[in-house]
Image (cartoon, rainbow over all chains, first blue to last red; front, side):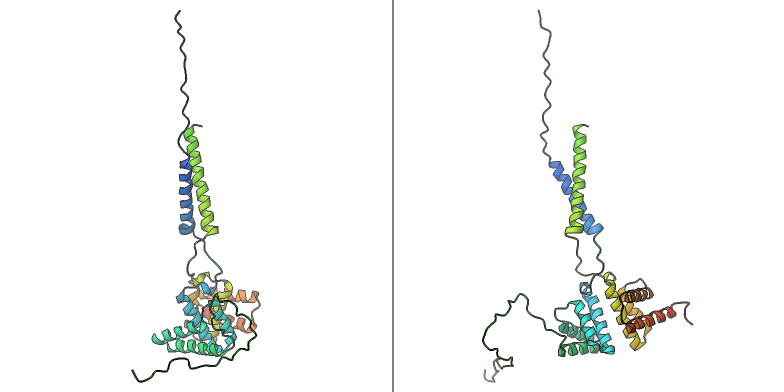
Length: 161
Length: 119
């Protein structure tokens, strides 16, 4: 008798060999879209910023106004505290250089106010000259400290070649 | 669901996860920092101090036009609005009465100078 039965062997479905790389692709696409949205389209808006964050042009206006107010009120303590808000590395230098620029631009009254505040601040106890950063604290010694007196250490130019 | 459907679902979820991670990084961990900010973004204490400086100068020179130019530094919102906000802040934070008076005088003169308010 002929065996009509036929063995049917269903071909097993091959396991999905494709790697989950598409997940990584989706993740990267999403990350890029998120960064573009957060940095470009809808960035963080800062509020309650301090004058130190202003750009240089606006800082100059702020500094000039402080100097003008000092020129009319003479309140040095208030002017110094306002100047401190700008966090200039050297407020005297900033005032002086701005005064020179104002003078060059023909703004005599502004230049005078800026220079006045610079000179008064320099001679007052409210001014602390800038110090070098990242310097180690001075070592304590028992040696007596010599007073700081100007000395002529520069070579004296002579007329002979 | 067919295998292809699952793949689309996971792909979309991966994009959403990446988007969330990007937002977290861009808004919280490393938000964009501008090198400088606009005076409009100054804190109210600093704006009030600038208005006070303007009022001090106005008290000295009486130049209202110049005072308005100075107040324009704070933005385009309108000088009277700035001065009124500054007075409110100063009252809340107990500024010295002479300083308050200076700002009130400036506010009054700006108000008088507004179109339709002049005597």
